[in-house]
Image (cartoon, rainbow, N blue to C red):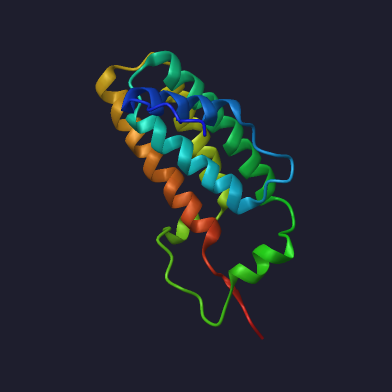
Length: 151
């Protein structure tokens, strides 16, 4: 019986980040999976201090956001439509003026590019990374909100 080597917290964190960066999203990814990928990456980004790792995470996030944006313009597969059907619409956390998903993705992409650039003062970069985190989570929640009513 093989034994699994024990990893320190730093080793397991580094291993997770490498897996995250090296595992591309499949071509068959759906809207919800792309949104989940974005939230995973942005959560790791918020906690990462290493400049090179942050840059790689920003690149990965931009890739995931691009896939999300592309999927927003495509017809939803039946399994997602089933999840979005609701007897009554729930109250959204997204302000009424942000009901266009593509605009929200564009905002998240712009914030990612600002953070990725590495030219901002540390305090500003930290605050924008926090804003990016919240924006991506808001976006992910929005695309998963039930909004299709039954007739």
